[in-house]
Length: 173
Image 1 (spheres, one colour):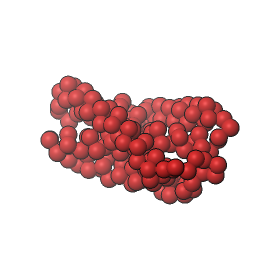
Image 2 (cartoon, rainbow, N blue to C red):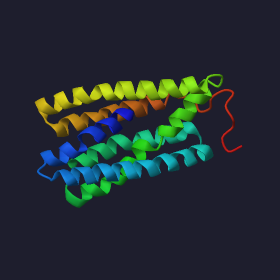
Image 3 (tube, rainbow, N blue to C red):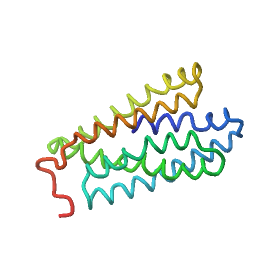
Image 4 (cartoon, rainbow, N blue to C red):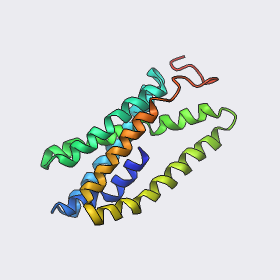
């Protein structure tokens, strides 16, 4: 999901400009994505503490691909209305994944955090050039649409996560 977030950060203003909109519209869309994403991170963490890490990871992953596709096919105010849920669901599991990784490595929580942060940003940052190249060849909307496939793959992979991590504190305890 980090790939989806990073690419939206990088290309959302350009996407609106390519559709004939002003750069301020794209900047406004990005601001809306980031603000709603911040609230999504808080809500995701709260829900994770009550219902479990895997539940939040899986349910938020399930929402991202359809939201990306709906956003790309929508127009006008409806498109802007899809940005807050897209922000919430793309960011809802960010802190949750970090907590989950730290539970997987209870003796090395800082290393787990470093692997998650470094790995996520390294891989996600590396996709920006590829998304841009695909956008140059087949169009930015097509390139951003491929992010839905990435999100769908993450959803499938998340289903294989164990429900509880051995040795982790019991959720809700």
